[in-house]
Image (tube, rainbow, N blue to C red; front, side, top):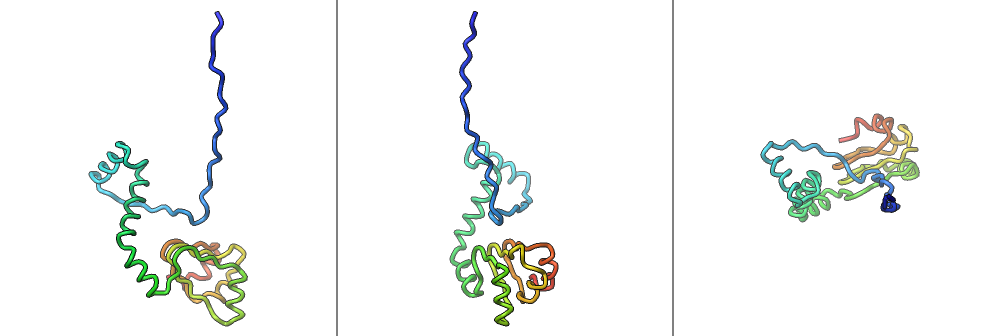
Length: 148
């Protein structure tokens, strides 16, 4: 007796995508057990794909609700909104011009990996980032007294 086996189909498996630097940051949230149970119930019922999806949606809704206040505050405080990258050349120009940088960002501020601690210290007067600040450990240490 000959067995009939279904032919195996080739299935394309997508390469796992690596998040780009600064794309996401992990935030821990403490919740009461009843709230957490209700979150899990909404996930189980298919309203959200997982707990993180619900939390991201809730945060976006709150940010949308306060969008006008956020825009006004960013403008009033002359903050950069989004990503601000500082290359070695940017910092060298600041030193040459004698105009130390005041980094004030809502989002992500990133200092290039080839920036030395001495250059960072000479070029940067202060760092205030609401979000994430990426720099080498040596540059972070050199700017420690200037980071708010």
